[in-house]
Image 1 (cartoon, rainbow over the protein chains, first blue to last red):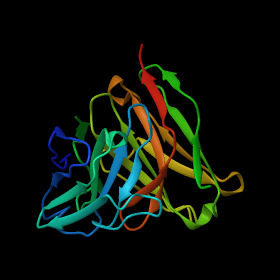
Image 2 (cartoon, one colour):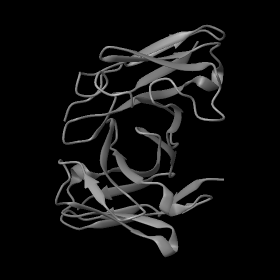
Image 3 (spheres, chains in turn red, cyan):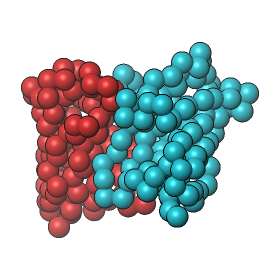
Image 4 (spheres, chains in turn red, orange):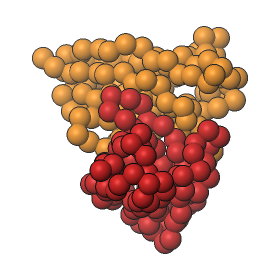
Length: 111
Length: 118
């Protein structure tokens, strides 16, 4: 089963901006505008931060933004805060038999 | 508020089956699909399948086809996921989540730890 590739870790200081990537193929990220991003604190359920590549659910801070270019999607967190320290993973619809595929996850550390 | 509450942790022996429930509240249950995912320790999430709560139609990941069954009880606003022929590799936290847009999942249940051990 294929997975979306994410960097293992990204770090930044409070107030800075960070960007993490999510690389797939033309069968998933590149082929559909159904990329979503989730924040997961240890021991907690995932929380939707971005859907349909760049849309934010109501209640999610506008410090979180998403984009896509080719087979790679990106999540940017601006004005980094201590509470942003968590694991982030991406997801995409895929034309493969698994229908939905998830990323390997990125641990965000606020220095 | 929209909420999904799952059943409690389970410990099963290899070869057994497990059935996890997911009770919805705060919205019209039949208007949204429910998806099931799992996260094994140190591994990424895997999508198991989903159910169209309105008509009961289901779709499963080919990896789990034949071993997983997702059902729903609209009178109880509850979805269920049953996984059969368990092995140690099925030890994971299982989550239900509601459809949000074409490819999003929100909210998620709190997760149910299923441990498979002899």
